[in-house]
Image (cartoon, rainbow over all chains, first blue to last red):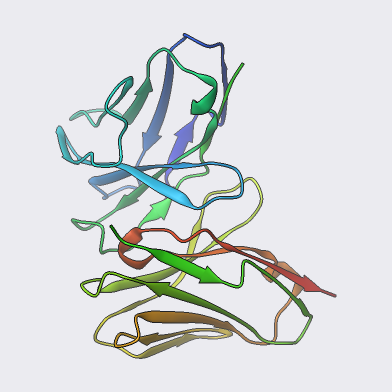
Length: 115
Length: 106
C-alpha cells in the first residue's frame, strides 16, 4: 500500500508566480489535510478536505491560497502571486476517518522556495 | 486557541539511556494525543498515540503517558539508539507543538 505521495518534492518560484502542490492520499483514505512548516518550527494546520468539499479552512490565509480535492485526481494546494514569506515546507496528510482527532499519515512534503 | 508547549526543546542523551519529552496543552476538550517523529528532509511519522480514556500505552521501547487533569502527556523512549535522533512533535488533536530535537550520542 503506497503511502501519501506529494509532488513536486522541491519547487522554486519567482515572486508573483503561481505554485501548485499536489497530494495523493493513501489508498482508501478520503480525508486530506494540508500543513505548512517553517524552518525549526512545528506544523501549522491550513485546511481539511474531503472529496469535492472543504471541511475546515480556518488555517488558510484569506488571500492567494486555495485548495481543492476533486472527485478524480489528487488534492491541489494553490498559491497565487507567491511572496518570499511563502517559502516553507508544505505537508499533506491523509486519514481514513473524519476529523482531526484521528491518526493522520504524512507525505514527504513539498519544499517551496520563492526567489 | 489551543496552546501547546513541549519541553525540553533540545535533548541530548547517551546511547542506551532513556529520554522523556513532555507536552502541555490548554484545551481540556482534547481527546487524541499523538507523537510524531520527523527526520531531516522527511514528513512526520506517527510513532505512538493515545486517547483520553487511556492513561498509558506502550509499544516496545516507546511509551506515552497521559494526565488529563493536569493537561499534559509525555513520550518515553527507553534504551535509546542513534537512529532515534530526530525531532519529535506532540500534536494534541493535531495541533502541533514546536518540537524537541533529540540527539542520541553513540
